[in-house]
Amino acid sequence: MQNPNVSVDCVVFGFDKEKLNLLLIEQKLADKRKVQYALPGDLILEEEGLDQAASRVLKEISGLSGIYLKQFEAFGDPHRVKDIKDLEFLQSYRENPQARVITIGYLALVKMEDFAPEASSFAEKVFWQDIEELPSLAFDHDHIVECALEKLRHDFIREKTGFELLPERFTLGQVQRLYETILGKKLDKRNFRKKILKEELVTATNQKQKGVLHKPARLYELSDLKNGHNP
Image 1 (tube, one colour):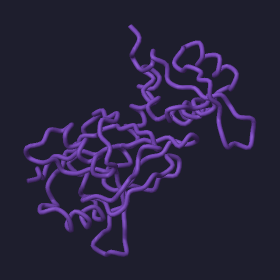
Image 2 (image 1 turned 30 degrees about the vertical axis):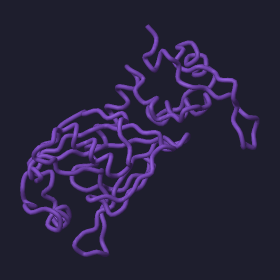
Image 3 (image 1 turned 45 degrees about the horizontal axis):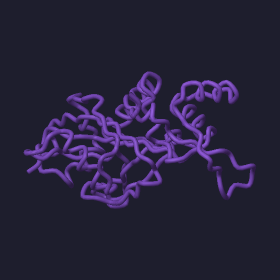
Image 4 (image 1 turned 90 degrees about the vertical axis):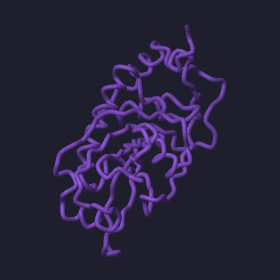
């Protein structure tokens, strides 16, 4: 049985080597010709903890478990699900659409190459959207995304949280793009490369890019220092 007053919403970020992307779901309204877009989320089950609920939501839409998932904020505005368009959706799917719902926001980071989004019990369609081209979202999800981005940027600067978005092996150019997309600003290529190598967060491999039209770049991987394996 679901608790009608508490939900989890997952802000799932992915990086396609060029852009930061956000995972969205499509919700059909009572008028099936209309849709709205939202973050993947669901009401918690009565016998379920918050972390369990967030993990369940991600498992349903991806089949993945054990990925980076962190609670970052609670959202409890009494009017957060009172908009007319939102009530239209809730009336189709919830026994008590007028109930006040407090949601717990979770930040998730996934490697897009490992992620195969699929429809679930709470989503007609699941898809990646460029963070720079987001549509208007349902409920207060625009605000939740803004808070998640702020948290990601804060943790990226202080703790280098965000490297989890990189593929297993990557170029320094891709690392720079990750920095630029998360921080929202351009960085000087020469200075950036000197800095990233000095910090020893990445380690060069003996492999280079394949199948590219330009000169293949050397591939790197996260160092043991970043992975927390060093004493």
